[in-house]
Image 1: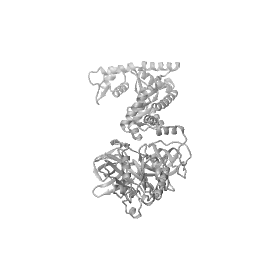
Image 2: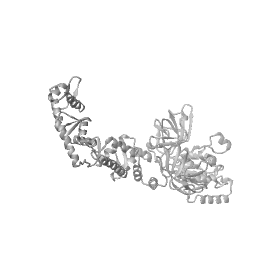
Image 3: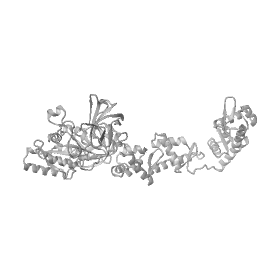
Image 4: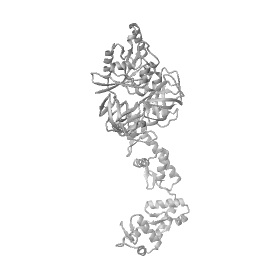
Amino acid sequence: MKNIIIGTAGHVDHGKTRLIKALSGIDTDRLEEEKKRGITIELGFAHIPNDAGYNIGVIDVPGHEKFIKNMLAGIGGIDFVLFVVAADEGIMPQTREHFEILSALGIDDGIIAITKTDMVDAEWLEMLTEEVQEYFRGSFLEGKPIIPVSAATGDNLDLLMDAIIEKCDRENKRREEKELFRLPVDRVFTMQGYGTVVTGTLMDGSVSTGDEVLIYPEGRKAKIRGIQTYGKETDTALAGQRTAINLSGVDKDEIKRGDVLARKGSAVSTMMLDVKLKIFNSADKTVLNNSRVHLYTGASEVLCKVILLDRDALTAGEECYAQLRLEEPVAVRRGDRFIIRFYSPMISIGGGRIIDALPAKHKRNKEEVLGGMEILDSGSTEEIILAKAGERRFLKQDEMAEELGLLKSEMSDAADKEIAAGRLIRLPDRTLMSERKFSYLKTGVEQLINDYHGANPLADGIPRQELLSRLAGSWHIEDEKLIQALVKYLIERGVIDDMGRAIALAGFSIEYSEEQLAVKDEIAGMYKDAGIEMIKTEDVIKTGGDAGLVRAILEDLAEEGIIVKLNPSYYIDSEAWMEAIEAAGSFSGGFTLAEFRDKLGTSRKYASELLTSMDKKGITRFNGDAREVIKR
């Protein structure tokens, strides 16, 4: 069964609520104050019975200017509008305001009902119809049905109903994949025996009893205890239905209007939004950079500052890219629509579309920022993925899917396409990085290591840990596994070489001067002559003169296998080291330090150093009384 949500719109006292009652039999004014004052204050809800097989839900909104914020809490989730204009009054202030709000929210279809026709004559009605046609010319309501009706007499209600059914035949744009479930909460109450109940328009996806969901923006977990749609209990609710959900594990004061029930990953909590903002054509006020405004999106209302990114002021009919910096978090998805109203006086001024739900903080008047926002605004899915993968921060594939409001399968298909084209890289931990971003990373790492080589020409390379630390700092990366993955990828791409404890530029080798080569040969000879009788490193440094040069030579000789590093204080000629290992291996069983000393014909001191090093390298094992060879 197809699910459709209709929203009413129009000036106060133009007969919206009475018309819905005539169509549905339901009085949507449920509050005592509404009945007393004769005007709608809060959102009202109804469903229209029909023989065409549709679930037709109705959101009846208040028309009074004082209650616009209540209207905004419900109107964004509709499929089309039933726009009401009273025959005896015509176009009025909230007619204009509601119309511009609907346009900014991306509502693209509707029916115009001219109500209270029993209060005017035919000539007046004809004149008003022409006025209404002219007013909506060039808008989404141009050419849409205009039906004169009277809820009092029932005149033309059948024609209006036929027009509604015809609109319901339109293509369903909502998606029902469970992964996308999202319901902005517009009412919260408790019922005896049930507990906390929330209602809202199920925007996307589906939900079933027993499902676990999150309450955004806090991220609190909740479980679906029961579901009602249009007054009937059901196991599953689908996109496009007005839905009441009984939650378990959540108190009434832990959830409020403006929160969002959603599947994990189908919404994001944010304190900043990149948007395309347009000021209403009828606005008589200007939005200045850094203006404080009320932001309405979904069913939420928060205060924020408007940062205009390419100008100092935005006037009627103009649009630009902007960043909204919020005073408290909201839960949204990229592509959501919004409205802004001035902080004081409280009038609607404009609206637009969210193009990035988790942006970086931007500087104004930067071409690269504006160019990136243009891609996010109008680029293809693949272009947008490349843009996000080119930002300084690093995102894993599933994280990017959440930010872009894509199914994981959609994200995977698009990423695979760009990887195959050589424009995108996916690391083993599924972090995505554009080839362009990798080029910047590569250049930075090469410069970093090259500078180190320049300052330390006799070092194998920059110490590995130092490289990891400096790379993390320059790219603001806190994930150590990601840093390791990036270095591994740079090695795989042939940019750098892993020298063990150090990282060098690919193809780098130490180049000695003739004088330094002579020192190197002299040091190698010293260890050769010493044999088992090892030389302390500090004594070698005294002989070589330059401590930095000598230490570099020692590491190089060890790398070449000419000497073996036992510890920072002692190196040994490699042949002498093999002699010591063979001596240990000559014992058929366990042996003592004294026996090993006598076998080598050296001092107890040197024998102890050798055996300690063999223990550390896993060649021998000391059991407290004797040693045995465990690796021959």
